[in-house]
Length: 321
Image 1 (cartoon, rainbow, N blue to C red):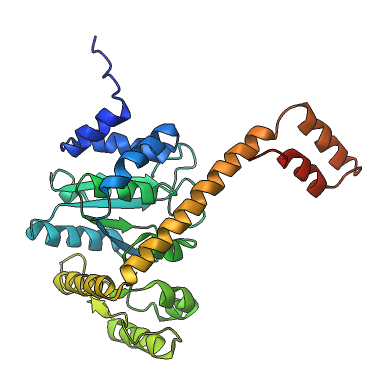
Image 2 (cartoon, rainbow, N blue to C red):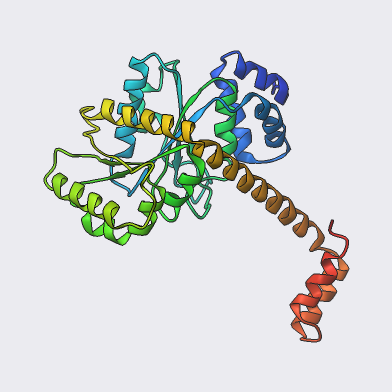
């Protein structure tokens, strides 16, 4: 009978990941997704070692070809001998809570490349489609030396806005003939895009889509004096335009680093992350105090309308700190 593999403590698991053990890194990300005390311990170990990585978010409507485009980008980066990581944020399974789409299905050409680490993460019902664990997963990947991190999102709900808060450069992917949808999503797209990509540009309507995007940029009230989002045409299935796209990403990185925008964005992200951590902690504490005899008594008083919900909540919150 095979013996079950002994579970390593988090510090040993983290060191094994630093030493290049992929299974240990995968285990770390699983613990981060779970979000318990071990996830917090990983965060404490990873944070001092992070900061050198750069995150590129790819987002857009379902069917835009983001996974194929990401696969082509991976191929280009590997030709440059860069080691990278990919987080593919997938819809959550309604049964297991796990990611529905597997990383080997999405980008199977690179799944066995030691220079590429691909991980599918579940949204777990989170409103924007981005898991709350994503920033911590990015930090862990950064800490173990993957300094280029691609985050591909499902592109539903408010994820287009959320990915902008999680990435250093945000690439918005559209398809030819998407003009009506571009108009419908105008405000959100204008705010989050650092680079526009017209993927499947070999199809009819690519020129019209480019004109639509250029007109949107001309009419938007955003400040494009320092950086106007470029529009790059690609064909993800053949790799056409991928070199130009990556060069544009590098140009944007140079711009945000030299202008101080990158530091501002990262400071904003950390503020928001700290706020989310505090909110989660308070939410957990609230669930703990909403039990017991006095909770039951107050609930009955609210139901009987002998007290109001606000007064009852104030009483339960006394001493929360």
